[in-house]
Image (tube, rainbow, N blue to C red):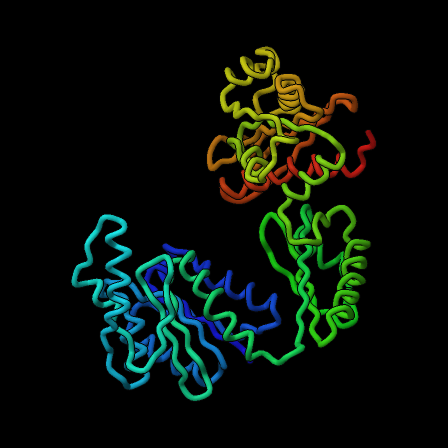
Length: 414
């Protein structure tokens, strides 16, 4: 009952557009016990498309094709499908009228190019697009059923959920169950996680690694016919992993680091503010991406210049002159200053050299200082050295600051 996904488009093959449709649909299917066995990405080339359809028809029960249904000349999916089936393209007046209605609603008129979107291989079933102009279609070839959907993610997701998924899931063997748990870790490299988990082979559970820097994730899967048994196996496996990984394991629910930290802040009734230099507000942005974050995150400052550190946070000119902006002494004053500025329980601060320039022998690129100030526990600082691109260093730094808050909350007793 395996599925193959074919994503099409020159923009995918050139790297200009990320293939997010595949990641999404693979997660949707696998979480429902449906195996995605193959994935193929193909440029807008007729012969290559035909070859990919032929290969997929020999090895997959269901084939989901995304992209290539637009009005322009490089949208070739319908033409390729007609050649694959050996049938002509046929104009569908009802689909064209639907396209025209949608366009007029937006204050536009259809043109000759939109007629192309109403052409489908003969004797295929149209899949309605409720939000866009690119309707999909499906057909059976041999032992395989093909589904053609547009590449625009919001259109693809809705059409897949409403039309394709029910069709595929109804054909899956009744009673077959797949359970998946994703555990997230921070602060360890892949080899270090593997070392801590040496010999970790829980009964009835498959273990896989997923690198999402700066995090390392574990994907635990169990399949069978009794959901309660599978849940029990995964609970035991998660407990074993927690025992081995300790505080480096921050989530057993595949939630982001900031969400796990936010839950602890709420649980411990603590408020937070942030003073950021090299991360440019990234840490604050991650917290405020969470709905309801105003309950614990009260404010932040981006103090990129020395002048702003002085004026907004009260960092002294003498401290900056003697030790430099990237120093223990400066982040100490930044953390305490932002906590006092916003009246929070916790203040965190970040100052570093993200690169690619600006480093010295004493403070190379990737040097980042962190400050942490709590209203009654005092203020402390840490230095880390990261490697990578500017964006990677900023991301590592923001995650490290968030993780400092998380680990403080774990041990905090108010």
